[in-house]
Image: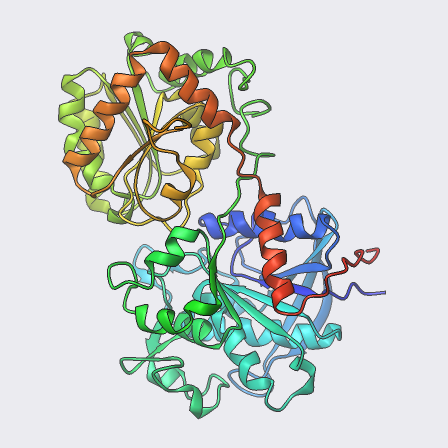
Length: 493
């Protein structure tokens, strides 16, 4: 008997199958947490050419599933894998998804991204109908899947299958909206009345994310502060008007941290494991980091600052690069891991060449080095200009590496700023290099007081941002939309 979900998550990424950022991390944990709580949940995602399926062996479930976009005869194959018991469905169409990268190359976005994800949204809906049981909740994420909620909004007017289905749309990053030419709207499958200022139209362009906001029963963001910020012109990215109209049905739920992966007590990448009750191993991890990066041994007794993230202005990397010469004069170590704009990559490499005894820069990303930096650094830097939620500051807290962060979005929701009684890190208000430097100076003063610093570390390590808390908040939101309050047991797979 086929598993018939009550809740479908639809997303362009899910870890460990596919990943470019935090979206995949969320989809790899939140649905599974709900599934383990007893809810009938599954995920629908594309079958990319570059996808990790080795440990889960997906099998062909449906062949030639009719999709009807962009012409009537087009179809998709559907594969299915069991992800710790929870079904994950993969939409396969080679010309759309069998590519080296998910969304773009170094030259820019794929020219047919709009067609690719219209097809994916329509295929996901065709799959739900094929499985047969009308879902109670369809939860889509970011612009790639936003049109599902628009399609369901209009399908409810004529197709009884969707009559009792409620839709949720989560904004992970409002800056990425999926804006395309108006010509791509006319054959997407939405009725003409969807083309209006309260729908998918945005200054004569086709805005997929705007449609998801406009046509969803509930809109969520990945932190309470981000939900408040994006209704303002400063953070609204041009969509503050439609967001203000949806404010009564919008909520912010902080993402959780996956402590099965990010936990120094059992981290397989670390030279030594440690915890809040036995923190001694962190010193061993610092020595291991210094040795791995060929920094001088004297850095073992000097503060080492860590940064992990995209080298883009959103993450404030330019603020950090600007003050590195000043930090070097104070004999501070700086370790940076990330990739992004070529301008910042070049600046970083130049600074590494100028200050080899203080600065280590790694252009790229490896999971192992990210874990080693979290454990081996003394202080973690997140000078983001905006941050919908952020996960790395949650990891740094658990690893006893107090964060310094801008007072935006999820950063101010998860860090208790010094010198408050229960402080766990440091917050600065304005996105300037001088304000970042002042916050670092404040942290260094506390760092010199070993007892105060240890207490700050331990409070952070004991902070709990587990996914179960966030999942329970999502359940309450779903119940407001009609999800049965009685938990249903998952079918046997």
